[in-house]
Image (tube, rainbow, N blue to C red):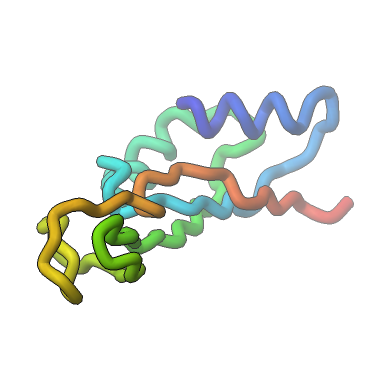
Length: 107
């Protein structure tokens, strides 16, 4: 619902059909892309975003080890540095949920 509200707020008084909403979603954001797409079609009904495509780019989980300074990408939810084994890691990305862009129908 928030995505739909943000898009409508961005459109303001313009009457335009939204073709595509490009999102960036981190793998740790607790958002399941297929579930989001499924729910969005109901929220968007009878709004300018009805029938808009949700294009989702998943953002990897990247961390920085505060012990050895290395940056790395995690493919599994174990927050250990693969270089030195330290558990002292700082999350750099993976929790995002952004609207990257909105594509409108040409008039």
